[in-house]
Structure formats: C-alpha cells, structure tokens
Length: 123
Image (cartoon, rainbow, N blue to C red; front, side, top):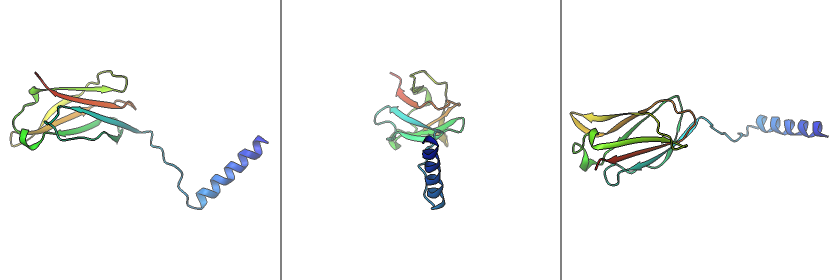
C-alpha cells in the first residue's frame, strides 16, 4: 500500500513538472536583518532579508540634515545574532569629500543566524 502511494505521489510530481508548474521555492540561504537605530538621525529602514554569501555588507545612511554633523566616534554600533550574542563587525564612516554620509558596516560570516543592527548616539 505504501509503495503504491509513493508511486502515485511521484507520478503527480513528474506530471506537475512536465506541465511547467513551479514548485514552491524555499531559500534557506537568507538571513533577516532588523534595525534598532537612533530615531531621527538615520533614514528609516525596514527589516529585510538578504542572501547569505559568507559575509554581510550594509551602508546605513544618515538623514540629510545630519550629514557632516557626526563622526563615527559619536555612535555605538552593536550587531547581535538571533541568540542575542554580539557578532564582531567592522564599522567605518561612509564619506564623500570628508563629509560623513553614513556608516559602512562589514559583518563576517554569521551562518544562518538572523541579525539585529543597533546604532545609537553616545551620551
């Protein structure tokens, strides 16, 4: 009986593929990135999914009125994974002509763990 059911399922799957039907696509090679940013200083960012290729790069832009006002030293940058452990990251200023437009963030390979990027002004 089980063998007949397996053969029937295989026949239906083959028929669906030959008919040009797409099977549901599941991409297990993505991570979700959430943002916890200083209000009114950075542009609004929506949480998003990115493909994981071994590392993650992100530029987080300042609002126009704060461009050139702050240096990287004015911010605390923390990246945490889904287990709330701190992930090592490298933050550099994103500059043009000596004016800081945002923060360029490089995060090494995190595997399949989702990330939360937190950036706040130092008090």
